[in-house]
Length: 145
Image 1 (cartoon, helix red, strand yellow):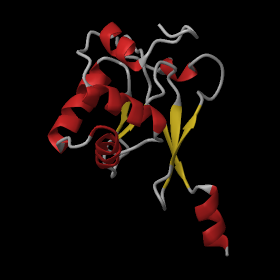
Image 2 (tube, rainbow, N blue to C red):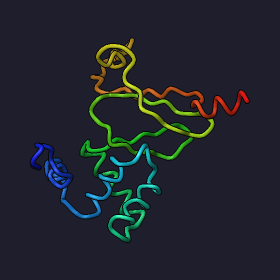
Image 3 (cartoon, one colour):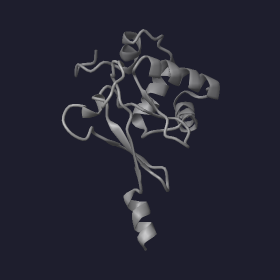
Image 4 (cartoon, rainbow, N blue to C red):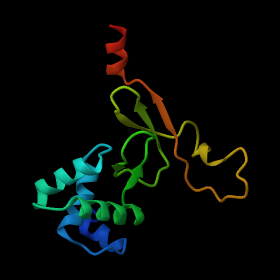
């Protein structure tokens, strides 16, 4: 651990049972430094940090990091998958119908009320994925001008 008590990226990877490589460290840091990035943007960031990496290696790394719970994959309908570093808090997202901007939003009321389905049909619900659709402030302003 670092002097501040926070684990390094390498320690987080090891703690999740993943082998530590320069590419995985760069992937995790790129996702956490970015804001709801797609695989191509992440690949570009990783290349800037470690040099060449294939798109296939990026997808494989993103899959491993997602499976380990270190990052989260979002699949907004009609859009490519996006990745974020905010995990473990069951937050939701706002998506602009015009420009595609994505923003985080905390659960609406109380402690994750969205995890209480009106009829869970016997499922043990542990996560809810809510996407609010609309226009971001910039697109709303542009439409009203």
